[in-house]
Length: 526
Image 1 (cartoon, rainbow, N blue to C red):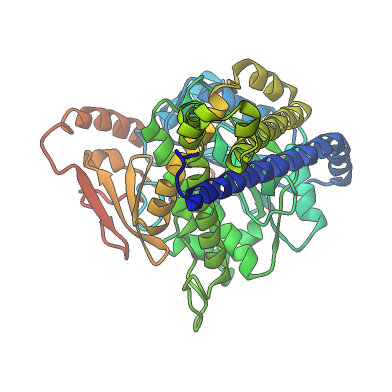
Image 2: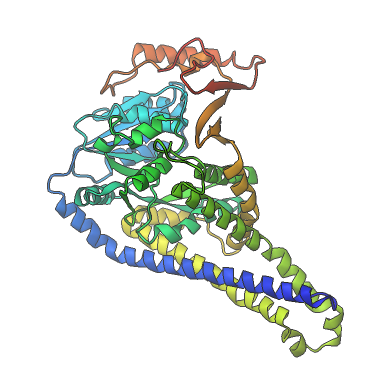
């Protein structure tokens, strides 16, 4: 809508409006389709849960691994619910695993056990120590899985803030029992703004987009927040197996499970299990770090078989990852241009030279104006309605799976009709940057540690320097779930005393190289 500018400019503007309108319509369509799928899943879920519970006449023994770090106000209630309200009729053991004795989660768990708020029987609390050549979460999981009871047939890897609805574990166990070709059964996170901020809404857009694939039930990806596997498939003796690749400088637990499944033509089941996750980001820095980490994962990959290449144009998994990143970056750039183009074209309807000399019917008949009205008057509202329909369908599924979760979503969820579109366009504006940074960058910060990647795997770990005593992690005997020993109490006291010395001027980061080199510490963590 220039001031009598060249035809090429008007044609380009019409083409842009057409492309943007097409993108909005496509987004609204896939979100509406995902909402319809979720509604069908909600209707079928009670029957699926009944079938699963009836088919498991002798439920397999289960070990639940909970890697935890830090504590928040809901930690105690979440852990009590996970340990006492899971609803699984088979034998269950729980394994909490922390990085170090000084972790507030370790202190709180032991305190709750001493008070009788958390059970001691059937519960282990392990200290894994600092990771050397994997991500810290993956190191903790490896440490814990290698120490679960040998009687356990299944292992559920669960984030400590995921509340399991009665019947959810039965459904995943049934899926694995019924189909020998499955490598894993996985739930998915339903991210909902927990605060009325644009940052929280922007962060939630990421998994709302992923719902398009997950809601089909035919996704080939695992989600580490709630993922169940057979213990036999997690043994280190399995050639080219999950544990082998985890230990091979692995970064992401679920992304490696996904790659191993594809390499061996195994399926991953995605039953309709959604778990409420209230997101409370308040700054753009928090949002950017979260989204950067999601795309950093896309360029991590398992070591290729001998004689095969891991180049993106040869490895199908890496090729798909790069194409996904390219599509997200291109789509993000297109949608990011929408707000400035909307306001500039709206202003031109009143301020350009031709607008002053033409009647409104003539103005509105111009191709660039027609496509502008179609884009922002029809396509954009259709996309917004599709997103709202999907959010409502997610709420219905969560309420069916867990009435308490649905009630919490209604009371504490902060989806806003105003902030949602603003958050969406903030997400798209940031998208090209965190996509390129994640795929082409070599470092990421996760829970205070900086990871360097090389050839798709962890090459180096840097952490803020702290007292050597904070990395004390005496080996626990297998099956030890008792109250803290004298050694543990002493280490806690010494860690507290040593913290006052941590403020001495030192280099801000400590480097840990892979290949078995020892951390710069007077004590080697186990």
